[in-house]
Amino acid sequence: MALTKDMVLGSLRGIPTPDGTALPDTGTLSDITISGDRVLFSMTVDAAVVQQWEPVRRRAEDAVRALPGVAAVLVALTAERRRGAPPPPEPHRHRPGQGDAATRLLPGVGAVIAVASGKGGVGKSTTTANLALGLRDLGLRVGLLDADIHGPSIPRLFNVHGKPERHAAGDGRVTLIPKQGYGIKLMSIGFLVEEETPMVMRGPMVGAALTQMMRDVDWGDLDVLLVDMPPGTGDAQLTMSQAVPLRGAIIVSTPQDLALIDARRGVAMFAKVNVPVLGIIENMSYFLCPHCGTRSDIFGHGGAREEAERMAVPFLGEVPLDREIRERSDHGLPVVATVPDGPLAAIYRSIAEHVRDAIGAGAARAAPAIVIE
Image (cartoon, rainbow, N blue to C red; front, top):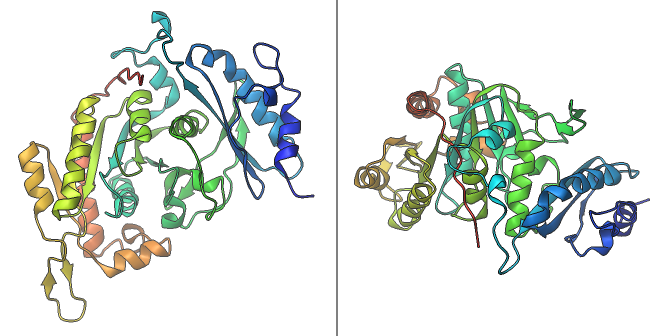
């Protein structure tokens, strides 16, 4: 029998909420997304009572997971402050300098780095994947979190699919084991839903899903966790800046003016939340004809380097527009892993060396407090 929304709601009816109301009758549930044997939905509650609802979220996950035919469940708990409501009591607010909550979120991770772009289509995910492999080649233990909830690319780039394994943690929680690709630990919403399933999520649910993919994933001990951010400067970027002590951010851009305008916005956004920008990468920097060797600057050239100099941030390197990068990425064969001795892999490893040196020079930053009214 096919899994239905009514079956999911029925499993939730026996779960009491803090005031004793059955969960489906509280008005807190989002639409329920069913993708094969995987179920996703959120619960949105007032920010003042969110801690009281965390046990409800766990019981909801357990109840839905117990349904026949369910293999994976994601229940996001989101908090929205009511208009005119006072802020949470002072003892519960996270201040700059208080790293405890963020440390518990990713306890074994040395440095968390956001890889971002001001706009889509600049090759950020491909760059992130090859940068992760370049850091691996330098002897670092590397993880990669796909934070692009609406357009996850990492499963395809590493040709890794299927549901993550689960195991029971010591505190009674069920945690996910990251998938592995070319020696990189991977986590993506794409492992929990079918590739063509649309992810219809409001901003708060995106933030909660990201938090859950950090909190409920057993990342183990890592030197670096790269976070492949969605394009833009929205909820995902704010969530990462607030919840995690980011060591820094990397901006990926192409050389043309339109992309650089958005790259500036990305640099400015991270500056506002006190996240250092480790540098800018110019992707699709130039094109070398594979037949005659003629160089063409299709998108211009050098714009990202000039922008980095203007903004006084490091320039990490140029990556050419190359058919081999595209073809191998489409087939889950990133060039650093599959053509390790080629000139393209050397470019990514050079960028990785700059990143390694940058994160080795600074201490972890405490997550700032960000309150969205």
